[in-house]
Length: 135
Image (cartoon, rainbow, N blue to C red; front, side, top):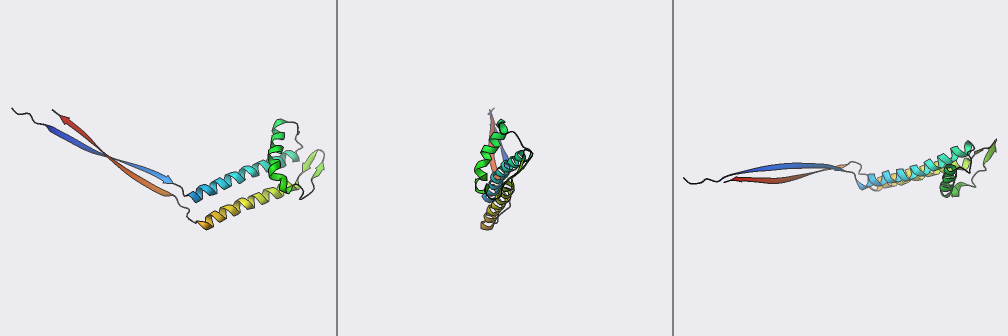
C-alpha cells in the first residue's frame, strides 16, 4: 500500500484599523493645552491674591513665582487694589483675556493654513498561511 500525503493549508486574514489625527489637530490641541495651563496659573494667582493667601505657604509661593513670568508684561497695566488683606489684581484679568486671544489666534491661524479637520482611518490587511501536513 502506498502512503498518501494529505496537505491542508489554511489562510488567515487580520485587519488592523487605526485612526490618525491630522497634524493640524494635534498642534491645535497642544496650543490649547499650553495656553490653558498658563491661564490656570494666572487664574489661581488671581484667586489666591483675592482671598489674601499667605505668601509664606509653599503652594502659594510656587503659584506666585511660576506665574510671575507670564504676568510680567501686564504688571504695570493697572494698579492693584487692596482692602482688608485681599488684593484685586486687574492686570491678571487683562492677562487672562490676552492669553486667551493669543491662543485662539494661533489655533485660527493653524486652521486657516490647513483647514483639514477630519481624522484619517487606515486599514491594514495582513495575511498569513498556516500549513499542516500529515504523514
